[in-house]
Length: 137
Image 1 (cartoon, rainbow, N blue to C red):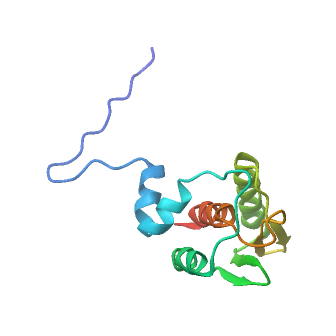
Image 2: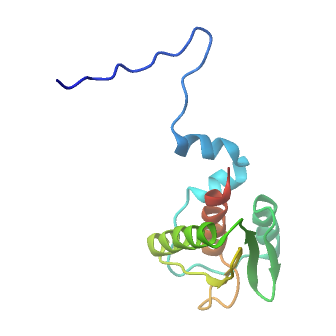
């Protein structure tokens, strides 16, 4: 006989839990959440210095130098490192915008730059935000 498990009811005074995907959006700053929901577009133009600075404020830990956005992510072991790299690969494939990755035992350096535009575009900021969303705990 198959038993059907009854859904648990929330105790009095507690709020229902949001799905994990929605909780992650609330864990991010509003600016980062907004960036991470956008999709890349072909033919993106270089960002002005003021636009880039605005987006960098939302992208904690990312730096801009040599026409690139860069951040190093650290992990406890190789397995976690590779899981993160595979998650980045999925984002890159879905957005058709691929970073340069430097993969090590317990860290990954992620670098975004739009080569066709010769520097940083909104697409780079969007993908950086999507990668940042992977890291939110």
